[in-house]
Length: 251
Image (cartoon, rainbow, N blue to C red; front, side, top):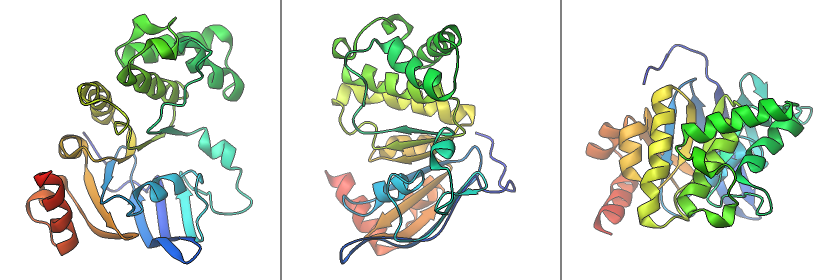
């Protein structure tokens, strides 16, 4: 994984706060992500991981602070967020596939509606991305005919077909049976090797160790630690990081 650490950030978060009533989900978070960087966010349930991720494309509207994506401040009320979102792929816990459409149609729909591609061009791109995620033979299947791991790979292919600059993953394996997790993580690992800019919320520590350029530990709405995976795993500085690792390693 080659990473230009001198390149200007493609994502820049400043003093990000999110409040739900009197509860602060995020407390003044600062975060930068450079082009080609893989950032993995981990932490206890309810710590604010998904809230950060969803703020990067305004699926969550921050209470205060700013988010700049590829030079555009998306927290500016005048921003055309739909235009920015065309450059950001998002993969959720649930696959969000249209059950009445084939795999191919699921992948071509947004290409035609948003990218204005012809039916043939969208189909060619869909087939290419299905090959990339390892299931080209499923093009004419319906989601109900696929395993959970296959459905998640279709969801990834759908995002990749839009040729995004950034991919966001919100616990993409948490809804999968254990035997299906590896096939999805293998696809994500290959994307990381290819230089895709990725921000990943996950509990899969093996993936974090193998793919991340940087790990971020969040707890109670704050980043308590960040660094290269080996350094964070082997020499955590913050007591909350050590407590978190103690819990996940013993379970």
